[in-house]
Length: 177
Length: 319
Image 1 (tube, rainbow over the protein chains, first blue to last red):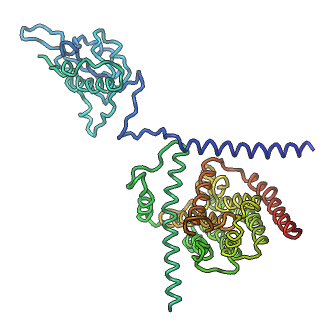
Image 2 (image 1 turned 180 degrees about the vertical axis):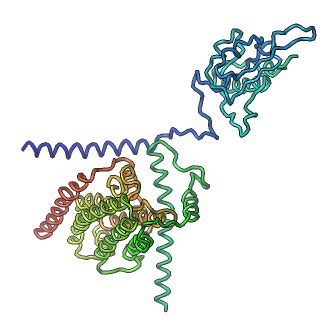
């Protein structure tokens, strides 16, 4: 008797779970797929995600925030940052970089340079499509890094993450000699 | 001469339909499985929603190397895909597509269908034995046990319909349903359920795809096959999926009988609805174990189909 009851119970449970299961799959079928069709549509970046350190541009003066103090260069574990300080016509060292090179092929995206920077001159960008067939193409100079920052900033503005201060301030001359 | 030409034309039509059916069903299965799993399925390969995916697949399979594994039994191995394709083609002979559209209205239609589909096992076994591979052999043995076990409830479940109509021709069975405006799915509901479950098992489809269980047997009996030979297995499989659904429609869902639309359209519509349900089941239920499979076949479906036959016979006798 007990076995018979168990059999009916098992049959009932089997039938019920099959109906419920098919209900779930047919409902899933009419949901919008979660797939993001990558090259056509791009997924939003999570906050705090990082891809490459880039040089921020001062929104008022249109110049780099970097004063060429070299802290990021020293804090960089794989030593992929290389800064040469500018030297003016008067022979004195000037508070901006002559060259600022970042070797992305070595960079491990650790964020330590951003944390070390006392002048808010570096930021982790939201740009990821940087692959190249040539390793030399992965060495970025300061103009390229500022350009990447602008691209990244435009993405963030479009995503509503920060307020646009106007393109012209950003687009103004980045390099000073 | 005329008869020969006519026969040739019929054969060409059947083979063309076979290809087209596989073409559509492979794409449909991938799309449906994609949407069930909240994906898109094929999208990039030409046409709306990746409709040319199958064409790309066929091109890829045709350009593959024709490879025969070293230890294989060459004759058995090379013949197996063709042998598994033959029953898939032959069963179209008796399917009543419309009121007057049937290739050959055999008076033993149902028996012909059942006996020809049993031949599928031969191709599977030839592939499994000829590959000289343990996975193929185990897959073929499983397929053998499974197809043999489920053949019996499958045929017994159709006997209720045969008793009720008193004919073995598929055309006659559909006409009997059309005359009384009553599809056999209602009086023969148990028979229909047994038929559908057993037919899924006959087709080696999930939840009964033990013969090609990837996680245990790589691909079962067609582990060693690639290129066009593999494609022949796939075409036969999808054709069998359609023909078995079509047989279900003929026996239980009134075949070409239906209002407004022409008969062949109803037939195709109902058949592909059953195919869709098969795909739906495939992407919902997990695979059963071999002992559960045997339990379901022998301890549940077999007694149920026998009881259905006896009940139908008794009812018709008493009435």
